[in-house]
Image (tube, rainbow, N blue to C red):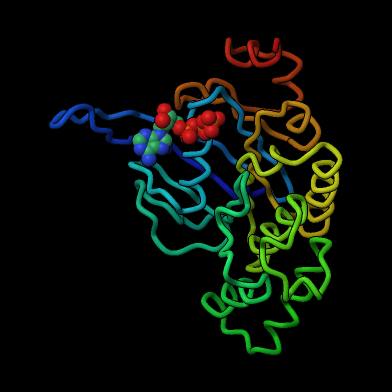
Length: 253
Ligand SMILES: Nc1ncnc2c1ncn2[C@@H]1O[C@H](COP(=O)(O)OP(=O)(O)OP(=O)(O)O)[C@@H](O)[C@H]1O
């Protein structure tokens, strides 16, 4: 099966200042490659600072890579580190949904903005799409009129999911998106994510410190250490026979 998302030799360096004139270069991602099929989940794990969030941002187009390619369904969307065109097929959800939600807009207005800027749908079509998307993530049509502060943490993650899904992406990157939720709410959101994946063949890139979540949700696993891929392959195989020091250490905790 052709992968929906293929990443080839992706590298990213940050320049940091130390002192008045000195600049250091920190290589945060080094030659990262992987592929994920439609309907699959790839988990990305690694110790803090290993480059997981940077990878998430590069995938979603929020950061440019220095070099490497990203292909979506065989189409090049990042070539030699440069994003070729705007792509709404890879959407990112953060740990704290309030970071990406405008407190001054109702959920309906926010979703409508997304559709107005990115599609040619008429008002009637947009309203229909918003209603459908709210119901797909387990929210009610009344929630159209709600502001972000009127939602609980779990509901806010549903709102973030609605915003990610409204443009029918192929890939959703979940950057610690489930971490701050309490266990019962997290279980509900996980079930929702798995249901949506079954229904629409969505592909997830799951970035998390929760190894139980990784085991429960993922088909493939990429283990990062200081920006290098130290292990990559079938999730069960890596859990059963870890090869890298990092994975062995993560499993020992
Ligand atoms: N904008 C930036 N400028 C300079 N350095 C950065 C920038 N963003 C991230 N870094 C550095 O890149 C490295 C990787 O950061 P990143 O947030 O991707 O790691 P992470 O694996 O997601 O960590 P965590 O699990 O703590 O979220 C860290 O050393 C971080 O300090």
